[in-house]
Length: 188
Image (cartoon, rainbow, N blue to C red; front, side):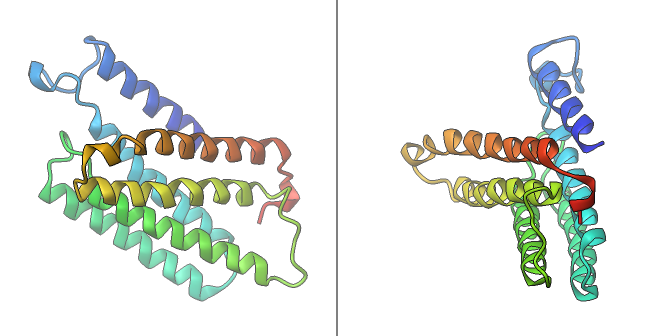
C-alpha cells in the first residue's frame, strides 16, 4: 500500500508542478504549488511506519513509546500547520521532528533484534532492509533540513542536494533489495 501511495504522490506532484491542467489553486501565482501533497504524504508515511514498528516489536515499553511518539508526531504536524500554512509552506520543523522520531524508533528496533537470543539472521528480513534504508535517509534528511533552517551560506547548501538524492536512492535501493531477498518467515 505504501509503495502505491508513494508512487501516486510523486506522480501527482510532478503533474501539478509541470502541467497546467492539474492544480490545486485557481490563482496563477500558486498554480505550481504541490507542497500540500508532500506534507500530507510525510505524516502518513511516518504514522504508517510507526505503526509497523509498534506491531513487530515485542517489548511492551517500546510499543508504548512508539504509541506516544505517534501521537506527538500528529500534534507536531497540527501545530506546524497552524503556525505555517501547509498549502504553501513546507512543514520543515515537523519533518525534522518526525525524522528524529523515525531514527529513534528504528534504532530501538535494531537494538531489540540484536538482543534477541538466538540472534536471528537478518539478511532475509524485509523489515531489516526497510529499516536500514529509513535510518540512512532520515538521519541525513534531519541534518540537512536543520542546516537549511539555520540558513547557512549557499556555498555550503549546494552540496546538500546531491547528498539528499543519494540518500533517497540508497533508501529505495535497500527497500528493493529487501523486497527481492526477503522471505515471509523472516519478517518480524
